[in-house]
Length: 621
Image 1 (cartoon, rainbow, N blue to C red):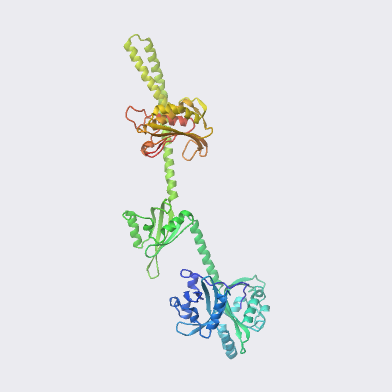
Image 2: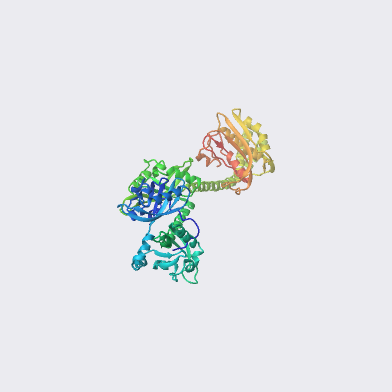
């Protein structure tokens, strides 16, 4: 006897195959169609009745019932079809050797099938007859039974017999000769008496599985929760009337706790898999991926759908002529472990992904190869971060180099400018005071050369940020608009000039002449990149400074002027040096290499920065 709170019996397991409960259950589990044709049966059928599950497929469940028990079984199944859910019944079932064994069944229904749970039982009528005929011998057998056995008599359910297993379950207390309500009052509170009354009144057996009950096993101690599997069967007297109840079952608390620990462990494993940055994967013996689990975000689902049913190299669309892939395939075909194999693939969204995988082979106890189990890590973000870090390091190194060159250039230009001042002054005096025409011509040539040297020196001073600035508040869109006519005449009609000026005031505190000179330098360089014509776009705007735009603090509001052309573009090796003084890609005599250097120095001296970049076929400064 056991307690049971008021609820419907637990439905039998519906899963099959890989479900460990389906495989390991000692109870007979069955799934049938609504016509009772057996769709699935668990391994307990072979243990209890000698039927292999495969032998039962398609066989009507009703055909296994004893001819004398079939009408009752059919009637109960009919009640199930009509909506009575669940139903319980007791019937003798044919075993594999043709003999019969009595089982108690509980069935529940779904839309298209019935799900049943059965357990071999001792006939209550046989128990009653045995007690009357040879009671002492039967009592000794029941005392030694591994499960609990209880006999209740009369409508008050007086304990007539309990075995040792039952006393261990409920605790040592006086039971025999006492009504159930008096002997176990805590179970009455849990609905036990109502269920026992139903069995006594209807004459129908009741099957319970993993039923929870709270028992005060030690007087004065807190109640303990136990779980039991049991069956209650009516004991019928010679006149066909119910005279008592026979109960037998097992304390399955340890089993339930083990199952729940397993479920919690599996849930914990799934949680770790879902929050980790890795995927867990498995293959079958043919090396085809059967499982690919990880966090269920969009990009991971793309990979999951892409990989299932394929080998690792098929999922990656690998080139097997690649020595690395060829070695990896050979490793897996030889069933060897591997670690940190790195490769790339394109996912279902067209994105290139970088992965690192490790795996180990699985073998059964006989040494047969089962497949692989492994883990894959997405290195895409890591690769991208590393690329960005390298770019930042390159920019920083370039900035340091430009700073050093600027300091050196500025110092030399300052001293050279002082020397040129002396030369130019003396050349002017010599030209004014000389009466000889040839000396006067030489003095003028010296002066012109010194003037050109002074102009170059000014460019060097601009690059070294040592020129004098006459800062004023300028509206960038107005500066650009006023320069457009001059730029059109400078570039020629074969180049179309467009403007993309941001609405609203975009002002900067800087030197007007030097800003216009910088825009002119950028425009001339852009025009040189379009010898056959093209489109040049002048734009102004505002944004916030980003990563790698030193000396501007990240997030600081800034305004900008940009010059974009549709010319031949800038190759990466040239792009890295465009702001270096004296660097030029033009022919000898067609450029000093100081134009963009002046732009760089002017931007830095004004508290800003300059940036140039675009692959060939698209230039931008």
